[in-house]
Image (cartoon, rainbow, N blue to C red; front, side):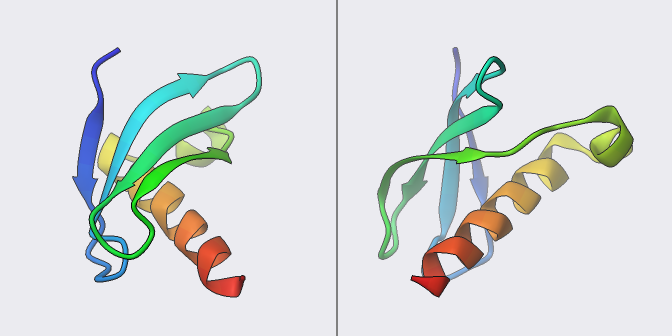
Length: 75
């Protein structure tokens, strides 16, 4: 699978690269590129037509990265 890399606009997590999707486990696999938290991660993130049907792929990735950044900064 080809990876998708997006700028997040957040200094501590400048880029997110989606490396795979596990539909059976409803997980998105990704890695942070650059910044403080560089490395591989996975996050439960259910993509549904009802919630995300009107969003672009970039907007979905922005929502995923915002969700993960919130999780990391709470620790």
